[in-house]
Image (cartoon, rainbow, N blue to C red; front, side, top):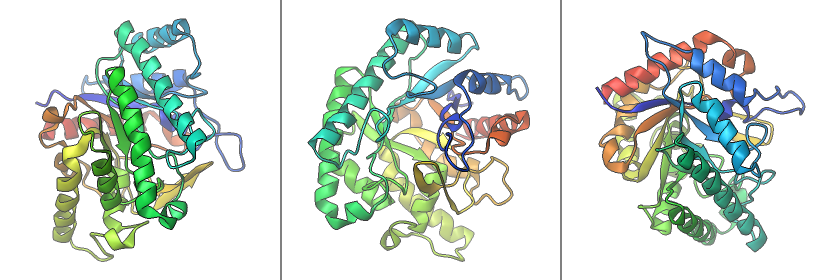
Length: 338
C-alpha cells in the first residue's frame, strides 16, 4: 500500500464565501477541522490538512504565540499540516506577479509571510511535509494577451525572486495551474512559465484534477486544446497522457478533485474549473485512474501526501457528514492504487 498521507483542504470554507450578494458566509477553521475529523471509513481518518494563510482562518500578522495556539488546536484533532497557501492575491497581502514594482513587492511579501508561518508550524512539530502554493495572482488572461511573451517573463521574474525567498527558508513553491490565472491558463502556457522560471528544485507545479481537465479542453486557450466535444474514451486518455507527461516532472503537490466539464466562480474569484462531489453523476473524471497519471513516481518528486480540494462547494454540502466520508473513501482508493 502507498505511504501517501491523506489531507483535506481548509480553504473550501473561505474561497468564494463572504458577505456579498448571493454569497454564503465563511465556515470557520474550527468547524472545518471538526468536519474533517468526523470523517471515517473502515477505521481510516484524514491524516492532516492543507491550509490557507489568511483571514478569517489566519491573520497573516498573527504573533508566533497565536500561531502556536492554532497549531495546538489542529494537533489536538490528530492532524498534521502539509501544504500552505500563500496570500498572494490583491485584497489579501499580495498583488499581481505580472504587475508593477509595487504590486510585485506585495506578492513577494506574501511569500515571506507564508514562509514565516511555515517556520512556526515546522518548529512546533505540526508540519514536516508539503509546499507553499502560489499563482500569478493576475485574474483573467486579457491583460496577459496584450504582450504574452513579455508578461510571462515578468511573472517568471517574480516567481524566481519568490523561489529564492522560499529556498532561504527551506521551503518549496508550487504554482497551481488554473484557467483563471494569467500565464498559467493552459497546459502549454503553464509549462512555458515553469521552464522560464527554470528552478525545478524550488518551484514546481501543483496539479488539481478539476482544473487540469479544463486544460485539455483549451477553455481559455483554444489553440492548446487536446480534446474536442464528442471525444472518445481512447482520445481522452491519449490526451491525458500527453498533458501529464509534460507537467508531471514538475508536479510536487497534488489535489484530488472532480469536474463536470463546466466552470464556476464566486465572489472575487474568477471562473475556473468547477469542483464537484467525489460521486457526482455528472463528473467527467475517473478520479482513481486519472490520479495515477500524476502520481507515477511521486516519491521521487518529494510528494508525501495528497489533498482533496472541494473549492466553492455550497455550505450545505460542506456541512453534510456523508460528503466527507465519500471523499475520504475516494482518497483511500487513490492512495491504494499507486
